[in-house]
Image (cartoon, rainbow, N blue to C red; front, side):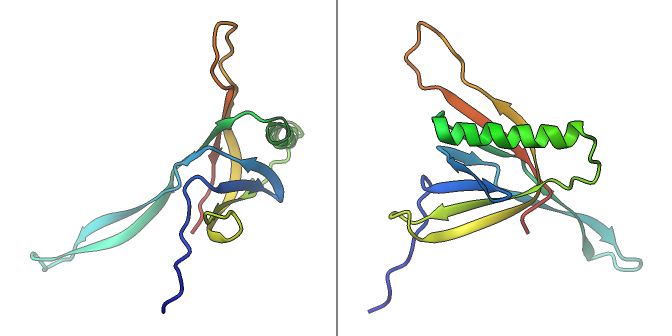
Length: 149
């Protein structure tokens, strides 16, 4: 009998940046890379083209979740640290290292992980507040990065 496959559950993942856990999130989108190439015609060859690698482009990572006291405070702590580095003029700051880990159905086994280099916050958005509403308070964090390959 073959061993049972360990499957990743799309709703079980967590995010850390430079060792600081930013907690669990409800959604993560933008985990993508585009391989750009340039088409070149070789001299004298009219029936074939060459594809030359040009660039890799990584998408912005967008994280969303219901606000929770400890996890939301961890995000604010990381954002403050990033602002302090920028304000103090440390031009050598390469950005942090983030890790997104995908877990199995028991949340015990890491099925896959992505390590993002040069991570910087691009945007944080707090919840829309209304005395008339009954919606959950949602926070959104967008991360720019230099790549995961």
